Length: 212
Ligand code: 5GP
Image (cartoon, rainbow, N blue to C red; front, side, top):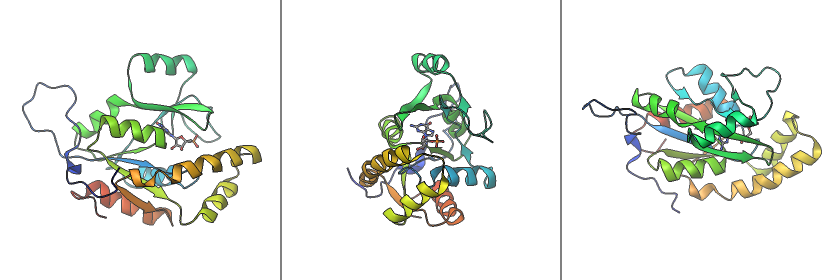
């Protein structure tokens, strides 16, 4: 795999539906992945709250809502049977079991609708999901969000306090594997600080070339 920039990122997806001879609007799909606790969720939430021009995908998941999470805003919270049904009906652009715990997936139709409407679109998903999107929508821009250092990643995971000791150890193990996948991505952005990272991603979302 190459980590060098490719020339054709600005094309976006074909318009869903049809019946029009108009060219598909220019829009970009940016897929953001990176190791656990690097801050992907914080960055995508920041973009959702501060850049309403960008369409941020709301994933479906079988995990339970955390306090403060709202169905349809942070996730579509589904039970196993509902998730199974969407898988069977081919509604997912990608889906994966994350941290051996719950299933997460991106619904295809809303992504295609956003791109067809000319809106830059952001998916914040795990590495397995990013690989699936790469296979299906190779024109998307794949961005790896990296921590400033391994020590900082550990500090963020411990600091957020949402996992117990055993779960933290398991996630750090996964993080090592995830960090090794960086060369598969088109661009790496180091997440020093959320606003700066968001700015870089916005630049990438609107840039016809991959360079920030
Ligand atoms: P959390 O449960 O902490 O919100 O998210 C756990 C992990 O699930 C994160 O690494 C996040 O990137 C990943 N994730 C969230 N939505 C999706 C999705 O739609 N597809 C995939 N493959 N992973 C997702």
